[in-house]
Image 1 (cartoon, one colour):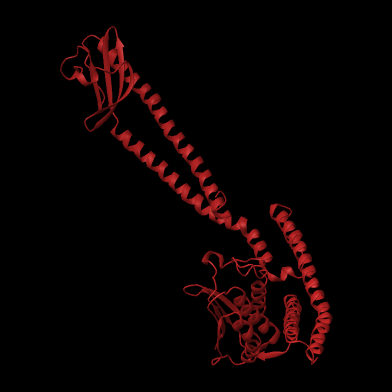
Image 2 (cartoon, rainbow, N blue to C red):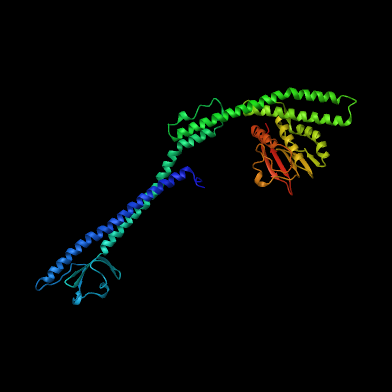
Length: 423
């Protein structure tokens, strides 16, 4: 994509590219100037020397003596002055001629039907010219390298305010209402505008989170009274001796759902307080005790669906944990396994680090496992659940410092492993 590269790399590339372009134009200008000066100056000098030789020819008893390093030919000349065949195609004017391993500058002039050729050995000039070109090339490469280094240093300096701003935004304390604004720490430039935008976005986010926590706390608190009424009513109904068996079963289901709802309300209330920095003082219990109670409550329901239920609790970790949070996590994972397992088995295994809940349900595709802990996300064809349970489990684990991992069970199914942080 267009903006895949980092901003620092794009600054370095832009700075280096601009320098390379300018240095390249400058180097090409030097090379072009050398060639233009070469033709102009040498052509003028050779033309003057050729004029001198022509004047010597017009003198009576003349004796042609070209300067050292020069060759002089003309049409009709004899001996050393006889025109070579390889020079015959050249027209009047200035030329560069290569004869064997030697290079010459040559001026050709035609006077009264006779053509004159004056050649000047340019070996020394070519050596100096090559040295000049090497200096220009070295300067071009050095300037490109320096541009990359300077661009990198400038990018770090230019992006330092952005890096600082990013660190401040990532800081969890920015979600506190008492946190100072970011914009006053920066100049009124593009970074300052970005800090102002972050201040606005963070203020809206803090407000939304505050409303969400308040709503969660209020709802969880207000649900306690009706849930207590439902629970006490169920107890009274269960105490009725003349209540039919089917009605008793329905009352027990209502009582169980009421207990689950009460637990969920308490979990949301404690979670809202914990995420707001005010952890509660809930009762604590061992994993073995919580697991035994839930297994006793859910074994009949699981096996009543025709599933095999396996419970292994020989290696439970020592220590006690927040009972509401631990019960909520374990309950949601067991209920999730029950919902999405139509045939086969469900197992709960306690180990020294936590516990594992496995099932033989339809499983979750590998590409969807990273999203399964998001709210309202369900990757299953079974129309049960709202996609909230696993999201709640992840939030509780994050608050408590626990870990949760999802993996596949062969040939199909899910395995949730929860690692508990022993206090």
